[in-house]
Image 1: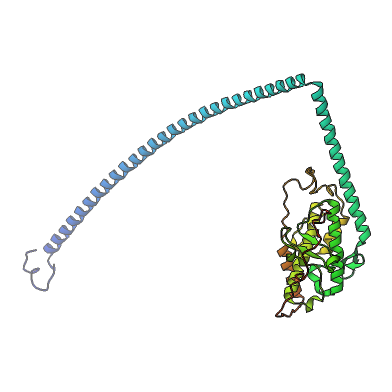
Image 2 (image 1 turned 120 degrees about the vertical axis):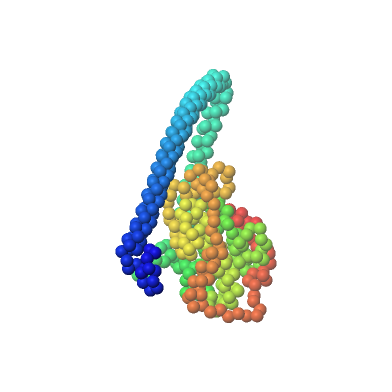
Length: 374
């Protein structure tokens, strides 16, 4: 490409000699690049083949290692199984030996028993049978007593078109959610009857109530019924179970104390039902006061009359199996107050609130539910 024509300014490869030379150079460069590419491809194939061979060898080696370890684990498991089998056989043999020795000991004791010891053992068995029979008879007697009490107080259940109602001596037993529909005289009278009935029932069954019922004391000229939440509290902490005026016209502080008192009385009734296996519900179920009392006096079951506080022997069929009384009086009171407020009751607040029962002395007959007067 040294010709004069191609070297002129502005002209490019016009002669055949220069064009041929340039094509030859291009072909040479292309051939050189193809050769280099082939060499690189050969190197890559050689490297890939070497890596694949190494990976296969590594995989084979790892497989052999895993197989060897599995064989070791299987051998160890088999050895452990053999050892466990030997231990089980040893334990079985020892148990059989212990059972044989115990039998020999019992036989020896039986052989060496004196006639007197056999007589005492038979006497104990007979005494236990008599005690169980006596407890069963007492339970039946208690059951009969509370049945007679239900007849005397005329506890009845009546169903009408607008619902089911319960009556005590002809007086409707209030549902705690509907206290506003009863006047003061009705509430005071029926709650007084119910308090006496619960106290008598607890006395018949020899059950100590969870709250202390304070019956009317004519010595201090107060015919009202009170109740104490805790047996350890003083007489001034008693709560009224009676009202002197309609609930809607009472001061809210007096209403709250009355609701707390009637909630304690409801808890006592539910507790009696729980001990006799006639009540197992929650606080919401106890709001239907009449239903709780009706079930207590009319429901018949084989465990009724077995639960008692006045004996150290409590039948296994009764609540001697770890059950605990968990009725929450505050929950009953809250549900009752909510029902009263939903019913549209409005209470006035006065500056000087009378504390019910504070003007009465502490000389009260307080009943513990077992028939004793403290």
